[in-house]
Structure formats: C-alpha cells, structure tokens
Image 1 (cartoon, rainbow, N blue to C red):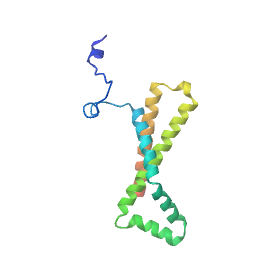
Image 2: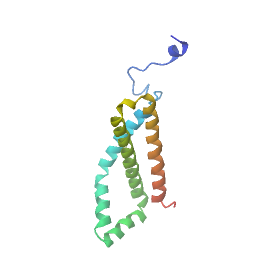
Image 3: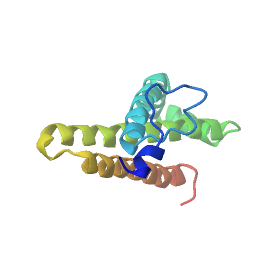
Image 4: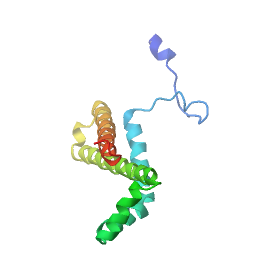
Length: 140
C-alpha cells in the first residue's frame, strides 16, 4: 500500500455533525440531490404556477393585475419565487435529459462521463438561470 492510500481518510459511516463538513461529494451526487430538491420546489410551487397561468390567460385585466404583482411593493418576493421556479425547472429538465441519455447509451457510461455530464448539468442550469433571472429583474 502506498503512503497516499494510508493517509487518506476512509468514510464508512458518515456522522452528521463530525464528518459532513469534511466529506466531499462528487458532482454526480450533488446533481442527484439537487434533482430531488428541484422536483420538490416545483411541487410546492404548483399553486403559484396555476395562479400565474390563470392570471396570465384569463383576460387582459387579469393579465395587467398579474404583471402589477411583479411591479408592486412585494414584487421582489414574487420575482424570487419565479426565479426559484425557473431554476428548478431548468435543473430538473437538464438533469432529466442527462438521465435519459445515460439510459439510452448505458454502455458508454463510466465514471468520467458521470463527472463531466454532472458538471455540465450544473453549469448549464446555473448559467441559464442567471440569464433568465437577469431578464426577470430587468437587467436587460
């Protein structure tokens, strides 16, 4: 056994308080956890989604009331909810495409592909969220 292998800590049972701070999860694990979180966010914000759909397509008056909510005193709160929804949808969609690709080409899946595709999912979802968030908050 080499010296590096002897010095490396071995995690068998991860203690929540003691080991979580020092445990480094691979990108695929982070994407998996965020995929679950994004699904939960979309489920929890489902009433907000239905309200937005109802307000935006009912009539011109209801559409004006809908857009006024985003310009009002608490507009920042509704914009943050919409931004959370944008991120959760984008991340869930892109991570879902990653899983579909791995299911279709299961012979090409290895550790390197898992790492690269997980990093790609993270970068794409965050970059698209920043672009759409900038549009939402009126940067451009």
